[in-house]
Amino acid sequence: MIKIVSVVGARPQFIKMATICKDIENHNRRVDADPIEHVVIHTGQHYDIEMSDVFFDELGIPEPEYNLEVGSGTHAAQTGSMLLRTERVLMEERPDIALVYGDTNSTLAGALAAVKLHIPVAHVEAGLRSYRKHMPEEINRVATDHLSTVLFCPSERAIENLQHEGFVEAFGNGRPVTTKDIRGLSPFEYSVDRPLTVNVGDVMFDSVLHLLSVAERRSDVIDRLSLKKGGYYLITVHRAENTDRPENLRGIVRALNCLADRRTDVLFPIHPRTRKALSALEVEKIHANVEVIDPVSYLDMLVLEKNASMILTDSGGVQKEAFFLQVPCVTLREETEWLETVDAGWNMLAGADPERILNAIDELAGIELDRQLPRIYGDGKAADYITQILARWASSRD
Image (cartoon, rainbow, N blue to C red; front, side):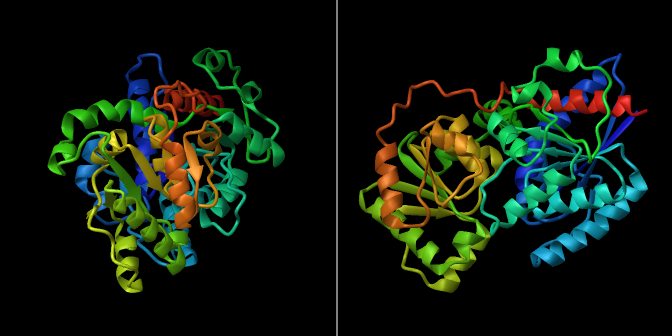
């Protein structure tokens, strides 16, 4: 029996974990497999409607065995509380591996708690870099990578980023891994002092491939909002660099209003943080053609993304989903950890400057929508590869 603990706390992490949960279930159905016990710790970093029972039902995953109910707070208070409470659970469960995802405070707290207890850490979505250390996410992802024993990377660029930081054990020299590669592995032993990097592809690509058909069957959001497929722009804003800076928020609103002046329909599912910031700052009134709605479910969001003519966002996950769904994207940030989408010509960085945002929209409006996307984020089997590698690695340590 192999025991794996996943530490998650934000909606995107549950989405990433959902594909791994499914593949662990598939693994355990095999008669010749060493069973995997998977224990989920929810730190409670996101604790509102985004983490409702409906959300878990949509993803097809069971509710977590532990909910630490940490809630909001300063970075130090939140991370410290997570660290203390996660440590208690890890001491009780004593897993073979702690699995952490992405770049949130939950990621860092889970990695720190595990490595201090000499529990190996495996990091899903390792190797991403924006090279902007003023961003809390950048600090979290860099620190977590350097605390990890196995680093599951979504792309060759992520592998290269880690090689520049001294990580030398790249499985397959950084090329995308295959099942044949994994089956050919001899038992191996790695540690935090000798970590392994593996290009497994992107678990979010797995998720979109799996859940899009589910979303299209279940969601009626297009009809419910009386939208025309391909006839609206979709925008999301939630990052502190935009919501907590009045000049950035004003710039984004002005760009939206200019876009709406063109008689273009704009849909804005508004994050609670953004709604509060707009109200407190008394920014200029949002144009009537911008339809502001409450946050939507993940399945509804996938359908909205697929059918938008363009997406404007400051979310890393939405940038990638736009790419997977072949929808042009304007990123409302000065940098992105997903540079492959920019290099491929489907994503443009525009910051919060209205003129740059509108220029990016005009430029992306002319791209060829029927061209083939490059396969830079794997083959849609990242979760399967992760499960196989963890199973072989854990069994080799017995």
